Length: 275
Image (cartoon, rainbow, N blue to C red; front, side, top):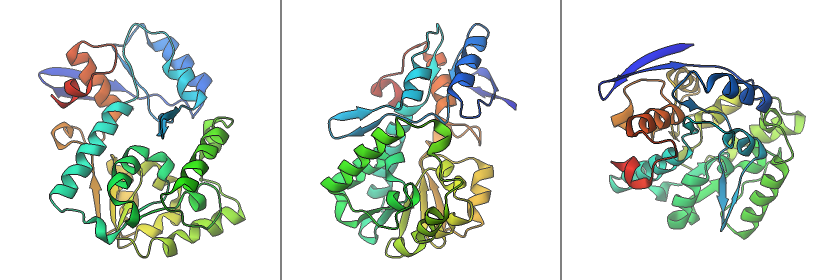
């Protein structure tokens, strides 16, 4: 698939390639394309996760993002983190969301930027569903030392797995039973925070968003249509409105676009992004 858009009087052409969650395929594509394009936007690789004073990086991300290129290699992770924190801050400031009504993360380990920002302020009204959605254990978790240690164990485990195995798309019998408990776990909570990519892998098990306000970092229109079938009250995206000039743009493509405009190979600083 390919598309074009114009931003700041510059025309951008975007060509999509699939690597089928294969590191070897991704590296081969980068090697073959880096001499013929201006930037490469990478999606679907695990972002680094900060827990305490440590950052955990999946070997697949490190292997791909450390490839030598003379052009920007962009995953959009830093831009996404800034957009998520700014977006949540604005929602709280304008009382678009009221944390006293509770917020549930079905997969908190995939949203640590939002988790870190919200639990510092509202840890008593937050719940995690990682044990059910990712581990097949129907137990709700709360922000505490035990949960942080469990997250570290999950990161060590994920580092030994390939990207395809880190998906709940084909859970076993116990895994399906645990996913079915998410609807019960989310009953006390008004808001659900998750990535749209993660929810789309749950298929019918995503029905726990029914009647809830769903908050996502970014969402494509096709995925929005799929999730609306499960009846959320509202879907709020944290993707900056000033950059929504293309309905299916992602953080990694926006990252590449802005770096080319600013003539930067390395990621922009916080001040440069916010300008």
